[in-house]
Length: 528
Ligand SMILES: Cc1ncc(COP(=O)(O)O)c(C=O)c1O
Ligand SMILES: N[C@@H](CCOP(=O)(O)O)C(=O)O
Image (cartoon, rainbow, N blue to C red; front, top):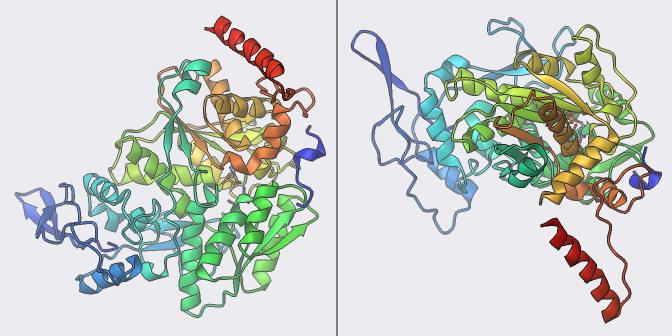
């Protein structure tokens, strides 16, 4: 494994209620009057299936976008009645145990996981074409809060929150990158895509969930609920997102980090954002255990994905992928897994789109783990017979160095219900895959290297075909992990560097530079 130098030294809402009228004997047809800010209010009656006309309003000079949204709400009529609540994970729609989202609760009565359950009957009053049009109409706007890729799906996320309570950096709407050269050169694939969730406000997909969680905390604090601060255990990305969103809302944040196990770039994020940063002499699983104990004693709200609110935001990345493909469903989606909330979030996003008629199927999901931290992979290989947490070993994919994932049950559910697969990547495989991707113009993180390794393995074994439309989820920005890239390319990692491209040291004179360039150019000529 790597030398220690690899690791740092410190560690509408305003959509109206539909009116149903009956046309003939059988088909109820829903007619709505559009009053959403992104809908044309001058159009009096719009059929549910017709796409909304673009809004034509212009903000008043003295207004900001929050004021504008507030003014529009006050002039609008009736609000929708979508609702959501916590239920025990995998409970049916008739579950007797449920909790308001305004309660502070992370676990069911039996100690199991919770899930946010939406009133699907209310959402079903609008058909798939309606939802597709509504979501499409909000993309790329600056209308508060719909300019966010998360809040553009507000009715499916936190339907009841007041727009004024939302804390957003207009996250989401991330690039779905066509990996043309990587696909062609290494895999003979022509329909390969990388969803760059890490090209984001704090450089990882965690922003998607954190905007939801911190917005709800903002609401709870306005309701005078006992929330003095928000805390998390982290391998570096959750802490970055938590501290940024809390700082933007003026809410104290506390982060528990495993000492010497996260990158310098990740460490500096909560420091810069003013969080209380605890560097603890344990691993992530140890930090997770501690934060769970602390948040049950102190008025500190738990921000890890054990808290199912986070997954409501994260699931919008799946909806976004469908939207970016014009609501056509890819064959495969590959997600790197650690604490295992995200794989379930993807499943949930795809499943809601199917259940509400936006698409007719869901993709097959692949969860990819580092071989050094692979409890889900081992469980899968045992044919789901016995789950055993592992002691996670050091991995270049340090954000997924997790041995006892809190969302194990959610991950198993997602994989079993999507005909899913689990793969693993050794350190050499994941670093090589990352370097290969970078050599084709990307700049991905080691976790994306894990997902790319899974793709390479499944493609080589023929499970994924050359023409299969495949999406690899890139979860963090490569710039957070420059240390490991530098070590790889400079040959500092024993036994690694198949795709290394070390810098050439050259003397500062014309002849020496010329010699190097001539060699370089002739090697390129012979490669033509
Ligand atoms: C960059 C990165 N990729 C992947 C993951 C895995 O996500 P999850 O914990 O939801 O499985 C994490 C965090 O765990 C992460 O920070
Ligand atoms: N990679 C995560 C680990 C914690 O995951 P969470 O989704 O449960 O918060 C991190 O960056 O901390």
